Length: 284
Image 1 (cartoon, rainbow, N blue to C red):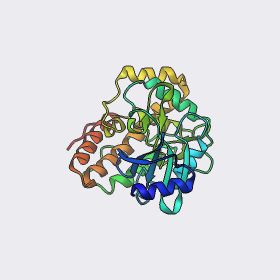
Image 2: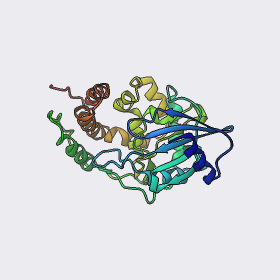
Image 3: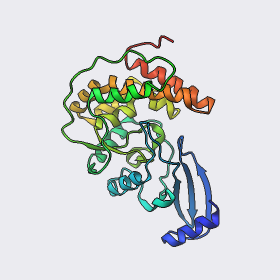
Image 4: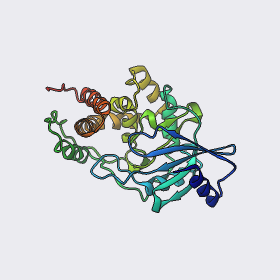
């Protein structure tokens, strides 16, 4: 989009405050994200790629808009300022800061704030080990390389309550630090198990895919100390092998199908890292 077309959009939405300047932002692996400065105001314009299917991370503009509205006032996510469903485009407040680098306790406290959000109306994601592994089965079936051994199945009661979860909580989607830490890129939210968001933050694959070092034991200990929820830690530990097996499937599939060589290589490293969460080694 040009400066003039964005300026017209801002004027029609009542967001124009002066001359417009644009700067592309790093928007993950899929959508176009632009920093828009109009007068003294800084906004983010997000243009969505077509909705993805058959993946762990669907790209759903309407769901992101709904999530941002649901989270308003909780100091968790940026404020939605405009959404144009027909154009697959939205504008929200710009969050100052850089992607998360350190301070796992800050992430724990952020997740606790998020728990106040109502998950009703969002897509449901698997809660049981069997259903989580079934998603991994479907992904491994698309791969040329053979899958690693499956974790031994087990019965596990569903969580006492569902949470509004982000599902892709790597460092690249955490902006700022301390009490000013926010979660962005809510295009694949769900009603699910908070243990899944905990896993996506602590997981080596999510750290690697955000080009961050795998978390140390002390960093993970600081996270659990700040969370102060032994029930959630026990649930996470029970589910971790199944989430890891499914994420390994996703990484292997992406390592075989992404067009960019450097991205394929990153997924290969992430795949190998997830195998360590299974206590198995890649035989290939």
